[in-house]
Image (cartoon, rainbow, N blue to C red; front, side, top):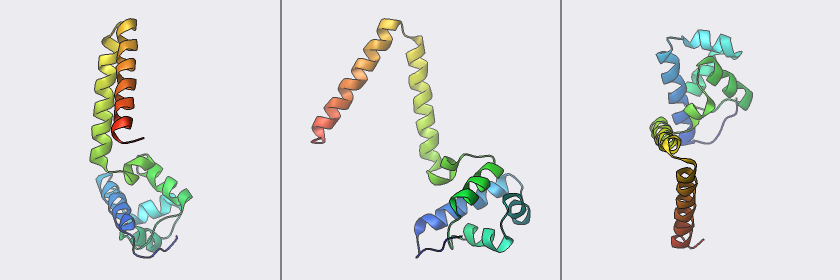
Length: 120
């Protein structure tokens, strides 16, 4: 495990790992064994006193049945984005070929307008 200077992300990551582990009814001991790390190391990670190596992080995410994005991004914003994309997809699929192309053109124009507003 890598140790960092106090980093708020370490605490958030640790809390998310711990929360998901408890949701899955997995003990710290079991998870540590599943991912091939010591119980002490897992406790430090969950307490936010450091972060796991990348391979260990992948193992933790997989063992807890989630992708890494679940732990790295705010779950509410990820959920909201997923819902927005599903809504757009639903609209897109209901359109004719012409309607789909028109929707794409409108989206591209909106992006261009936003870039102009932001001085890009």
